Image (cartoon, rainbow, N blue to C red):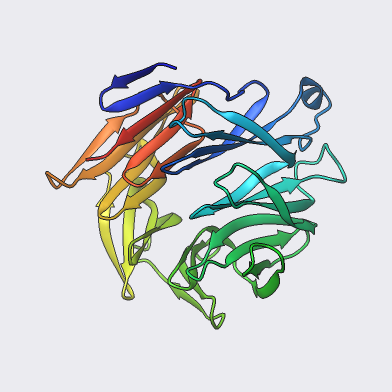
Amino acid sequence: MTSEKKTGWNIVKTAGVDTENASLDFMIVNKSYQLILGSKYTDSDIVSRRFNNYDACIYRSENNGKNWTRKTIGKGKFTSYTVGNNRVFVALGINTKNETALFNDSAKIYCSMDEGRSWKEIAAYKDCHIKSIFIAEDSSVYILGIGKNDNYWILRRTANNGITWSEEMKVLIDYGTLVFFNKALWCINESTKKLIRLSLSDGRVDSFGFPERDFKPLFVRQNMESVLVIGELTQTPMVYKFGDGKFETIMQYGDKNKYPVDLFSYRNQLVLLLGERAGLGVQYYLYWKNELTNAWSAEEMPAKYFKPYAFYEDSFWGYNGGHLYQKTFQ
């Protein structure tokens, strides 16, 4: 497979990833392996409008994305995943009752103990959608799911890789993205637009309003001992750092034409993924702080759009059109 350089990017032509009648949803990058989680469907599925009759496929590479092998683990679409050491956990949304329905009516959890080589089903739930999976400091695994007719989320935990599960608590929060940090769940309350901390030890819920009343929070991320909140102020991307009960503005990008897509942090390095609507599609940009010059830099990506993509340590990885793009930040 060929590889080329372009303005600091390493671009690799890939083999083994089937993009015809496929949806590629998540990417997992590690030092020794890479995974792409996606779904395959047939022409008859499209004609019959069978929205959930998908094969759940996992592509795996051991040579930095040049060659991939595919494994099908069941029916459904991936809704969440988490990684810790050699373990990988994924959640599938499945429709068992009405293939033409747009919603899922059940969920399954799969686990790999060997870096994605083999997979085992470890849990199945009826009338449930799994929003998040995460691994705690004590290596236990949590899943957060909701029933079709419920107005609360159920937090479940396993300490033995899915052999047994316990229901920890019901979460009465209309939340968006979520991170696990310092024995608590952190998220944005979609109704109040406040930062929420949910303690896993005693179930206590704390909420924190933002200094700027017009700030529109979008999602949260973790950075070492702090929580980062990414959003918009007067329609421009902005990032708050929250620590010791205080908010600190650490970045504001003064361009109303761009919006925040994601934020990645590794040690002291912060990288903001920005989107700009361009014609019928989207153009991606990277905005990061150079640790050598202490200056922020913005760069248009060599491909307009990446799906899926991932951040790993100090690098960005993105897939587009049969090529894998990788950039390391200095």
